Image (cartoon, rainbow, N blue to C red; front, side, top):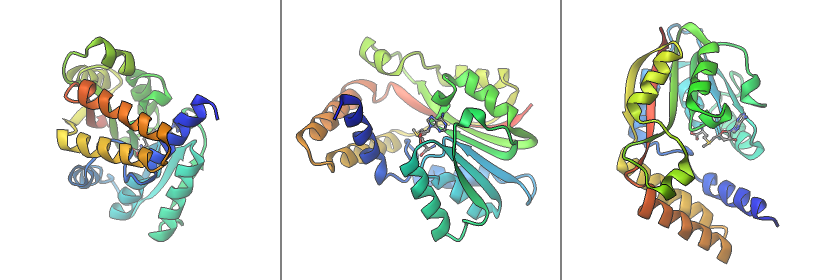
Length: 237
Ligand SMILES: C[S@@+](CC[C@H](N)C(=O)[O-])C[C@H]1O[C@@H](n2cnc3c(N)ncnc32)[C@H](O)[C@@H]1O
């Protein structure tokens, strides 16, 4: 196996038992689902970079809407489709294995969580999301921000992230009004990181344990308290 294969294996193992592949706790998930109520019962939800589809399934279940999830990861999509079948949603929620940048059909609820990198950066992602948001629609956009000044090692891992205020301005520049802005709590981050490392460790090899240890060091000794995860609920301006 190459080093890239190893990293893919560890990433898949890390995500396998996560409900959400980002620092999102149950209380915030429930709150966001309420904030994303569609403007009309015939609304359609769209999650670009949906992963295993949990948030989209919850949205469609709660609001009785139809939806599309878009991702390129076959394992995540298989889990998403299984979830839809188990909840009786397979008739109205469809998961597409395709590149999200090619998606054109507008929706009333558009979700992009932890997947702005699909377009390269937040500004390009927000412009693309604006293009597929119906006039009375709502967007949930979530991505990394700096909450404190990063040291050189953290900056090397995460690159040039905005702070929350800059991200909100980027959203308004892309043609949105910011209806809600927040960042994940420390406890959501700690839970996410611990669960992620536990998934890697379940691979059961010395390499996996080393990888999990490195991630723990990077987090506890580096980006904890520095990198935040921002949640923006947006409507077209
Ligand atoms: C960090 S995960 C977030 C998944 C999900 N939104 C969540 O919060 O659980 C990022 C997702 O983006 C997907 N992705 C990356 N590039 C993509 C592309 N070009 N088109 C569609 N999905 C893509 C990955 O497969 C992955 O599932």
